[in-house]
Each structure stands twice: as C-alpha cells, then as structure tokens.
Length: 214
Image 1 (tube, rainbow, N blue to C red):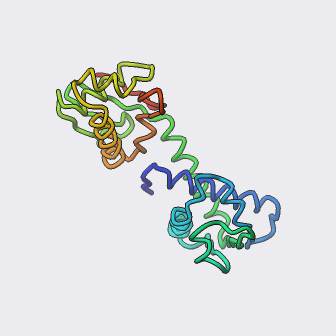
Image 2: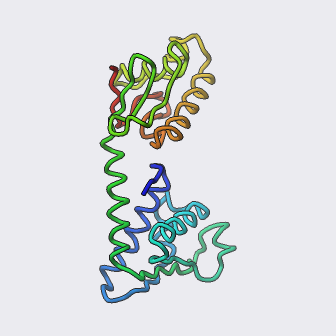
C-alpha cells in the first residue's frame, strides 16, 4: 500500500486513535458514537474538508470495513464546529482490518521519522531506503545551493542570510524554498516541512531528516 507521507497521514492516525480509545471503553461494540468535539479539540482536525477526506481514505483503505459518518447539521459543521456538536459515528465491520490499518499508518509515520536523505555530488537528492525516488537539482542552481547550504549547517539560517549569500531577495529565497518543498513531496513522497523547517525570527534549517553529502 502506497501512501504519500503528509498531513493527511497524521490526521488519519489521530482519527484512528480516537476510535481506538472508544473501542477500549466499549470492547464489545462495533458502532461508536463520538462527539465531534473529540476531533475538533485537536487543531489539525479542525479543518472540516480535510477531516472528511481522512474519513473517506480510511473507508477506502480498509475496504469499507471501517465506516465513519456524521449525523445532522453537516452544512453547519462545514462552516464551524457547533457549540452543541453533532455526533460522529464509527462502525467497525472487521476489527482485524482496523488493527491492520492502524499498524500500517503507525509504521508509515515511523518510517518517515527515520528517513535518511542523500545529497550527492551530481545534485541528486534521494531517499537512502528508496533510491528509485530522487529529486534531480541543477548543480549551481539556486535550489541546489539552498539545500547544500542548509545541509551543511546544523543551526538555523536566517532568510536574509541566505539572500545575501546567493545575491537574491528574501522573497525569492522563500519562494524557492517552497518550490523545493513541493518537489520533495512530489518526487520523494515526503512532506516538505519534514525536511526543511521554517520558524519565524530564526529562518530555515534541515529538520529531523538527515541529509548527507556524498
């Protein structure tokens, strides 16, 4: 099963954890009624459309052995979480399939955390575990220079510092880094923010993922 590792996976993991918590409380039940506030209290799950996509993905990947639906007021819910929240109903037809999918999602996230990326002398950025997935960058190009610079430093590098280093404006640096993140997600199937981290007032750095220069 192939999953692009992004925020969708994190949302799915949290949804499954909420359902699993209800399952532990009521081990003999197949259907669980969960107040939507259990979801909305988590910032990442407050996006209604994103949450609906997570529900659909769970249903699809479990071959509809896990069905999730929302009771009345879907139109109101789409605008904002209501003071008296509607009920989200989760029905598990096959507990083994539910457990299999939970294990798969947890393994996916674990694998992402342990990813090691290689930046070689030809400008190719690739996943050490999956070398067939790579991002070719032009040697001497701005994208390569930025990745190389960030990979060579453990500390944060200010946007202004990168701009001065490469003779560009801060806006050009920010735009290029966003392009790099999108390409990493597209070609390496890793969330861009997991590779290049940004924090206001500090700038950029290579996040948890290690990038080694060959």
